[in-house]
Every structure is written in structure tokens, then in C-alpha cells.
Image (tube, rainbow, N blue to C red; front, side, top):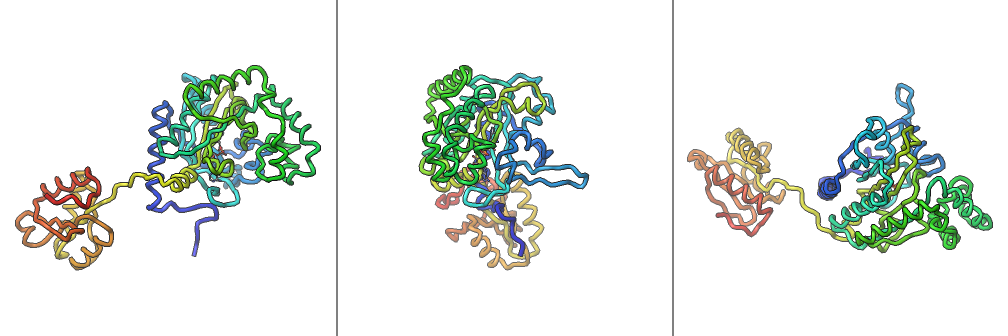
Length: 429
Ligand code: HAM
């Protein structure tokens, strides 16, 4: 038997209400803040990601799905959504429209990671980017949108952490200080961190291993090494977040796993689990567009893993709206009425009533049993005598009660039932 590839999953009908709900809330929240949808290809030129995410990162070193196509081009399945959006921004000259350009996406993302709960090889992100404006008010807006999104979904007990990792002017000085601080600790670091000390010292701060965490505890803080502009930017952001009444904490060890970040970085985590299960994160990337061949263009964005949002919705037992399904089935007393059944179902559907039709050569009893097994509220029985008088039988499956109705009465009743939702106790009237 074939199975879905490791780290991927099928999204079965019973989970679809979560996906529809998250997409609906994401779309509605983006509209409130003026973000427009963008979709980019599932794969891109591999160099786009190497250039933007950074050679020394886990994603580029170990996690990209890169392949040669039949024409010999190196392509990579999208391992994140920011670089493709920046590529599209440049390719379509979006720098010519009023800035910032606000865009959002709902995309499948591919990373060759070790699968575990909340970590998959194919996951899905809701993300958004505000490109073309350095104002810390944009940072506040991007963080506020994320917070509103989770709150509207009904998630609580979340933790918002922010930090500033400086710009290309002040960061090198900070990295030097970090390396200096870590030098005597190198032998005690994990193998990964020993490599990071040389290639990517910022990432020493967020290693999850106990030995490395201890050393990170008293490491120099980036906030203390910011240049004047970065300091003012960070102070303004904090003051805006206070005005918005967002309950943030400054976490000096928050650095993020992609190299393109500058200044503001932020993450949102479930209260009791902390960094193990970040539900969403983002930050500023003021140099990325220039790095990709554009003019210097400040930008900031955020993304959240939809599977992780679902895990948290389930954990917090947040009720999600059902996806509407048929509550009635058209059945018949004889195969002779099959045609009439199809026509009646077609008419109801055109009136907006979801309805099933019975299939196969089942007896009426078997059709009713099937409707029962499907948990349907009603069956519409086409029977000889009633049909000859221009009526059908409407049967309440729960109460095992039935009455004769005209097609008009039938559609009125079913339309009203749609409006009421599935309510077993409502009597037929
Ligand atoms: P990221 O932190 O790598 O950022 O991913 C964003 C979110 O995607 C994570 O917080 C997590 O919820 C989810 N996620 C990441 N990897 C996995 C995985 N293997 N399985 C399940 N969920 C996962 C970015 O990708 C940046 N592009 C975000 C951004 C947008 N920064 C600026 N703009």
C-alpha cells in the first residue's frame, strides 16, 4: 500500500472546517488592514532562496527540496513565502505604486525537517508582507494584525515576544561581542553551535539544548549594541505597541532562523509551551529587496503555520463553524422515479438547498437506512400516489414522522432549515 510521504498529510473532510475557518478569518483580518492577496508559484529558482534565507541557515543547508528540471534549471519547492513575494514585487514593478505595498498569502511550504508534532515536511502558512516603508508604525501594524488574527480565531493564552537585532551598521559590532563572549564556552556547546559560532553567531542564542541555553542566559544583548537609529526605531515600536495595548515582552534571545532579518523580530507562542512550538513569527528585512537586485526598500512581514494554529485550536477546544452539508436526501419508492428525483434535487440545489440523491437500485427501506446512517435530518420520498397528485413525502428521520407537501412547501421548509441550521427539535409546520 502506498502512503503519503513522510512528514506530509492528507487533510480529510473532518478537518476541513478548521482550514476553512482559518482561511476565512485570515482573509477577513487582512481585508480589515488593507492587505491584498498574492499567489506565487510553488517552485522558484533555487538561487532566490539561497540568496535571501542565507547559506548558513538550517533551511538552506539541510531542508530545501531542490531539483533539476528537464531543462537543467535548479528549482526549489518554496521553503518560505517572503522571498517569492519580494521577487514578485520586483518583477511586477510594485515599487511604482504607493508604498507600503501590503500583500498576504496562504501557501504550501516545503522543508525537509525531522517530522514530529507540529513539524512537517509540507506545511501551510498564512503570511503577509508590508513592503516599502521603514516606519515603526508599520511594524506595529504587522504585529497587531497577527494578534488580531489569533484573537478573532478564539485563541487565548498567547505570548508575544519582540526584539531588535539591529541593522547592517550596528550588527557586526554586536556579533563580535557575541563571539568574544562565547569563545571560552565553545567546548561546552553542542556540535551545531560550535559551527554556528563561526558562521552564524546570532543563532547561538536560540539553541534549545540545555548546555547552550545556560551560556546564552548571560550573553550580551543586541538591544545594548543598537545604533541610535535602530534604538529610536525599537523604542517607537514599543511605544506604539503599548498604545495598541498589545501585551509584549522583550526577549533578548529572540533572533529567528532566517538571515534576512534586520531590526524588529517577533514571535508568538502558546503560553505554557514557549519556544518549542512557536505558532507564528516574523520581522523586518530592510536589505532583502536590494539583495535581490532592487533599490533599497525596507519591509516587514509575518507568517504562521496553519497546522500549528489547528493544533492550538484543538488543544484550547475552540469551536469552529461546521462546513454546511446536505441535511436531506431525495429517495424514491421505485427506480421508475429516478429521473423525477434527479430533477427535484436539481431544482432544490438551484434554490440554494444542499441535497443528496440516492444511488443504486436500493429498496426504499435501504435508502432510508442509508439516510439515517449519514445522519440526515430529512428524506424527500417520491411515491406513486403522492407524485400523481403533484406532492412528495417529507420525512423527519429522527422522529420517524412524515407529511405530504407540495414542491413549493418543500423548498420553503428546506430553505428555512438551512437558515436555522441543523436543529432536530424544530417541528415540521
Ligand atoms: P518561519 O518562522 O520559518 O518564518 O515560519 C513561520 C511559521 O511557520 C512558524 O512560526 C511555524 O508556525 C510554521 N512552520 C515553520 N516550519 C514548519 C514546519 N516544518 N511544520 C509546520 N509548521 C512550520 C518564515 O517562514 C518567514 N517567511 C516569516 C516571515 C514573513 N518573515 C517576514 N515575513
